[in-house]
Amino acid sequence: MGNCIEWYDFGVFGFMPAVLGAVFFDAATPTENVLGTFAVLAVAFVARPFGGFVFGPLGDRIGRRRVLAATIVLMSGSTFAIGLFPSYQTAGVLTPILVVLARLVQGFSAGGEYGGAATFIAEYAPDRRRGFLGSWLEFGSLGGYLLGAGVVTACTIALGDAAMADWGWRVPFLLAGPLGLVGLYLRTRLEDTPLFAEITAKQQVEASPLKAVLRTQWRPILHLIGYIVLLNIADYVALTYMESYLTTTLGLSGRTPLLVIMAVIVGMMALVGPVGALTDRLGRKPFLYAACAGFLVLPIPAFTLMDAGSTIALVAGLALIALPLTFLLATIPSVLPAMFPTRVRYGAFAIGYNLSTALFAGTAPYIVTKLVASTGDQLVPAYYLMGAALIAAVPIHLLPETAGKPLRALDDDPAPAEPARAR
Image (cartoon, rainbow, N blue to C red; front, side):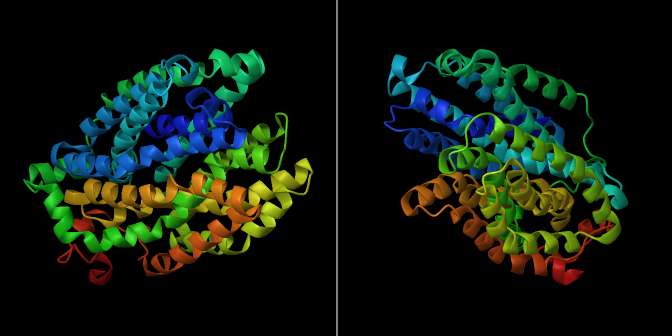
């Protein structure tokens, strides 16, 4: 539910960037409206590392469940608040200031969300089913994005473009309130993870988890940052940016782009669980290699197909991007928690993940939009994805295979700062 709400927010921003740009800013052209929206989207990522530094070590100190309850309140509450803000025409420069502040709160809370949720699921899952159960975290991510896209599409069809620009844009944001209450209800009724309960009973909880993370885990954190460069760029280019690319860059009109993207996301949701289960049987690394190779060779054919002018070619092009992305999404939630011991897992995961996300993910839609506008080259997103795959290839190769291996073994590791060498 937490990941669902986080990605619901991105779905809302990603599927009506021009409308929100016109509401929040005083832009002169549609492209400037889109750039303004993506800039606001990127602002949240500035705060994500700070959230990781605060919530991650706190989760290692007081438990995963309590921190996850706090992050879902902050996340859903700040998204709900955006739906109450006045437009630029009403309040002037106050509106973008309020939106930026809300996005900073969202980013701060998101800094503790994904790492905590992945840690929570991994520490509950049986070792031989960690890939399958972890993949449901990304099912929630994709579901949230689909929900955001679906709500925007439904509101646009039901209310019309004029009403959406006037007041209908508020509805998707306001729905985050009840979603957050449902998520909070579920999280407050969960017990903390068995692994955290074990180290608590053995009095192995770190008195200063942040200090322990920085002292003993900096090498695995750097490894993690390089490894998920590809995930972050692929995620935000393929999902958040894609609707804007199809409508603004390729000039597609009507509901076809929205509906095609939503159909592709449904396909990814159908695949992510089975792929996660396969990683338990075949290992994580074969799917990571396949994803990296896919993003090296498929982006140019994919974006060429999208520009071919037919719906079938559009679906095929998006599918070529979606398949390797699904391999990444199905594997990440089981790979990253297995890089760190229990006593610092939440903190090390959150810090490394959010540093990489801040540097590469939130900026991707803005940078790609700017490069396409300045160069006129519609294949810029393809080059961007291929570059990310090149960067991630080495960390993926160096990553040890962790399928089926118990997380408890990391707690007995004599050299926790260098788990790959110890194994």
